[in-house]
Image (cartoon, rainbow, N blue to C red; front, side):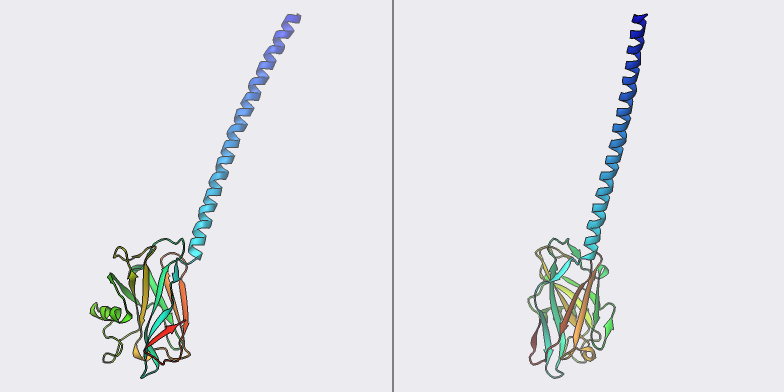
Length: 222
């Protein structure tokens, strides 16, 4: 009898151990699933935050002073350029006509999009060279001071430095946003111009410049 009781107790102990091991295995499996789900949720949250920050911050920044072409006869600005580059840590941006919008407002006019395209086949050392090329490519019909002047206010992008001659603004490259004004829409002294460069991703780059008294044919707009 005592032997039988001992055997039964041993069997019960083994059964209990098997059940306990089963519980431990199930608990470990559940813990793995919970931890894995937590890691996936954290990764998705990180991706969402990163994407949100990317959309909220502009990928472009101003790369220097704006330069204007003054018209002494009308005491107004006939054209100006704003240098831009990628923001620190920013990804390359396609600045072709299909992927970019340039919005313009001043004291007298407001346009949702004045962007007529990019000149990417070469770089230009001066605003006058770029304006001549824009006319040659029919992006503007007339240059400032030529006949009745430009038929519309237009924005054109060209490169000051371009490593691969394409429409993509890459790190270490610099682009110039050229705005050529219709004669009747030229900003004059005390006017404030507002330019918004809107790429397909990221926040717009907004550039406001106050027009100083036009006393020279070349003006610096700080």
